[in-house]
Image (cartoon, rainbow, N blue to C red):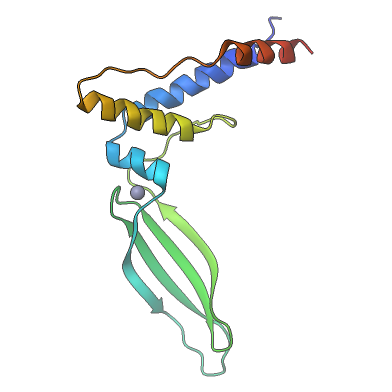
Amino acid sequence: MPRTNRYQNDAEARERVRDAIQHLPTAWVICRDLRHAWTVSEDFHVSMVRPDGSPGEAKRTLLCARCGSRRQEVYTVSIRWGLTKETQWYEYTEGYQLKGVPRGVKPAEILRQEQYRRALGEMGVEWAPPEPPAEEAASQVSEDRA
Ligand SMILES: [Zn+2]
């Protein structure tokens, strides 16, 4: 049975992620790098008010000005403690999420390289990110043999 070369698999995973990111709109690439540009879409809305002072619930909806994704936040409300965030969840714009990004593949570097590539492209300069250093490849291979 042939051994799996982990470095080779990581390199393939990186290339899959890089390829997916190259096809995203620039605004989405910026959101992935800098995080979302949240604006308040629906300000705090208290859905329950209890006269005995026990916690009620408040919700807030945020909207990303760049990519259109939404963040829903739910808080408990009490007279004594004010707002305490209980949960939040995201509703991403269709196509925003990258499916199947494996562990260990950190797109941050890929995202910055992609923005750099696009910036150079606007100046008419073609640029491709460098291959990983050879010593990194060699150390990965020796780990596989251990
Ligand atoms: Zn966004």
